[in-house]
Image 1: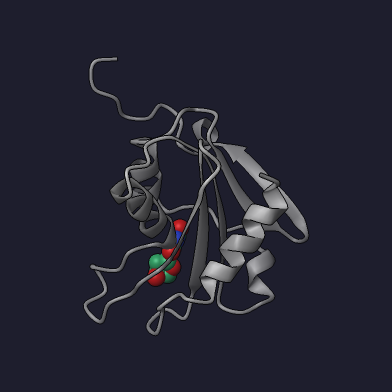
Image 2: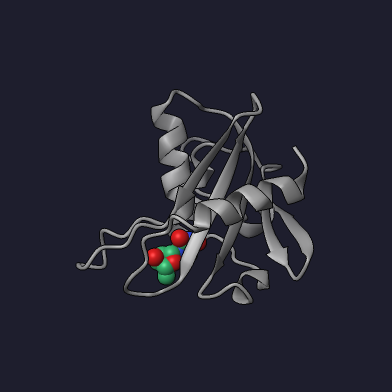
Length: 133
Ligand code: THU
């Protein structure tokens, strides 16, 4: 799937974000190896720590539907419609969760102005933790 198309789906998913505390709304679109796309948004909580990021929402939806192989995730985040052109990369917790299910060449796609900026997963989480490697 085209990177800009995946970003468009993430932007649409951002509309469903529940972010009354930070007002920072995020949408994610996760591309499975079989071509299916799972979306997610951030879901905040008054107690703050139970908040779930958009990326993890998408991953958990896909995993619980039986998907295990992914090739890319597009992320769109920001407080308003201008901010969403600033690249939004996954937080450390989401990087670790994504790491469980992706290869080094998994692509993280975000907006940089009107450009689709894409980065290999191994560049955003180098030397990732593995058992018995
Ligand atoms: N957030 C995400 O959804 N994804 C990220 O990669 C970073 C942060 C959310 C969590 C919280 O609801 C809001 O953005 C502000 O941190």
